[in-house]
Image (cartoon, rainbow, N blue to C red; front, side):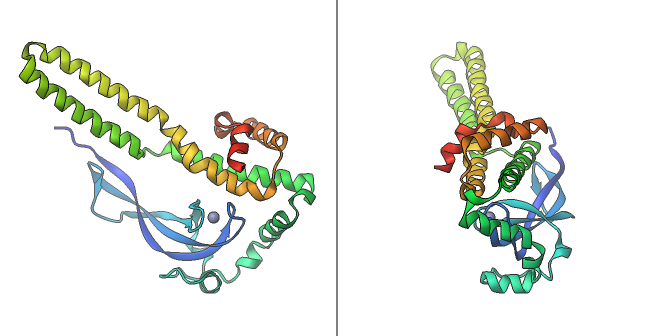
Length: 250
Ligand SMILES: [Zn+2]
């Protein structure tokens, strides 16, 4: 019998705060999650775990960012209307994020009148945020639904093949089962290999496009920004190019 056990992060809802979202370029409501590290047996946990930190998830775009509880006056149990939520949880938000809010306003009103340096900073910041998200995604061992379906399908396929062989051709049971097993393994491996690509397509690129849209960047500006990112050795720069980003910007 193999025991699978260890520690894994457990996320529990802890309330709401108002804060600046760098993807929406605006003040937004965020749901707060407490992160606990709990013992698991076969990935089943029974406690919230020892406190390891907090994170906040934008209620509009789903961007996840680290959160320092001490920055807020309190967490709100309810998702109040935004102005009220700001007053209750983060009354100094407009002072703390004055620069970012002013830049966001300039970007919305006249993005092409922003100076080169500022456009570059906005582009770099948007890409860096998603480069961090990719690193975070690749460091965690989460399986997406396609992989789970492949595992379930592979198991069912092996059972069906085994039962059919037992009835129809018991003399070929060993060979038949080995072929079925490796076919299933191949299907699971294929889905695993595609998982990173699905994350880019479903999660990362839509958020990157949302952050970049108000800036209306030219492909050459995106290329230069990706080049800078590549210079910093970030993985995201190897995975996407300006053509792909532009596709999502349309
Ligand atoms: Zn957002």
